[in-house]
Amino acid sequence: MIDGKMRSVESIVAELPPSSSAGAVVGAGGGGSWLYGWLVECHGLWHNVLMIVPSALFVVYLASQAKRSFSKVSNGRSHVVTALYAILWLVSFFNLAWSSLQAWECSPAKHFLWSVLSLFTTSGMLFLEVSLIAFLLQGNHASGREALTQTFLISALAVGLDMFLKGIYLFGFGIQLFDVSTNGSQWALWVVHKLLLTGVYGLIFFMYRSRWRERLPARPAFQNYISIMFCLNATALLACALAAHGAGFGLWLYNITVISYHAMYLPLLYVTFLADFFQEDDLHLENVYYSEMKDAGFFDVDWE
Image (cartoon, rainbow, N blue to C red; front, side, top):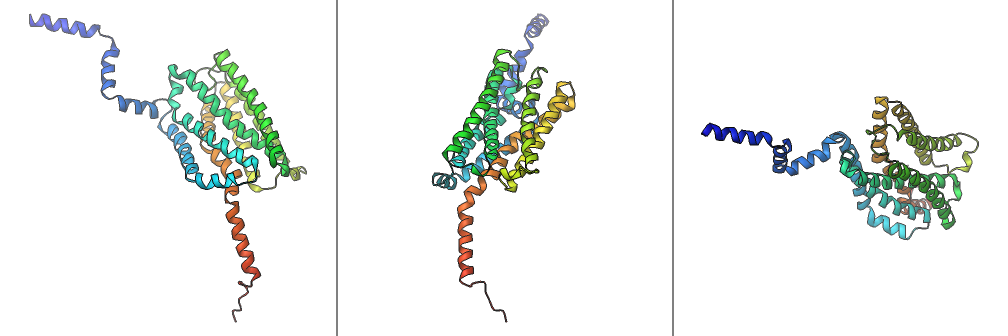
């Protein structure tokens, strides 16, 4: 009789679906399982760390400098820098959210949310890129409300067209542009996208080394920014072309460029275009003090 009861229990357990026992285990350690899935399962631990940590540190840095920066922006004379700083804050939050929610890419239930978040994040960063390109191409005359209007009009048109095309791919054709592991249909758009950016950065890169360089701002930091962005987009273009032909190395190289872009672009922009503006008053004040002391003969010391 006992054997009969044991066999009946075993038969009931055998008829249970496999997810029942797994669900009990996950339920017991749900917090740890969620954390593990968030950090490790989708792209791996190091991928997520390299995405999240730089983005979070940059937002923390912006917050630590916020009081000082806001006072200088409110009293500043450059409308371009003021608008750029405000957009930088917004895009930094989007980039941090995008970097922290990488697990959504591997969850079919989150594909729509991931696509929307990715679309707004990449479009915000592209808006900054196009704005700075338009700013540089205006040369030494990029100041005032007129320059701001022209810069943002060009950026809005370019980014609006980019979002429209990506929206057709995502929601019209159902192609997952931001999930490169699904299929190869998205690579055609990414090749065109990177080709255009590489061409624009390449044009400015060679302008700095030609007789037209006088039409561009002469600061070395701007030239370094263009050189870095040209190399990054050229590498991304090569990666997209290789991935479109099914090369695994192309997919690996593309992921490296994505990590580099989202981790380093916003700090690069800040250091190149905004850091000097926020320190301008202090440096100017130090130069004034030095000039006054020099004129007063403070450094004319007779050591004999």
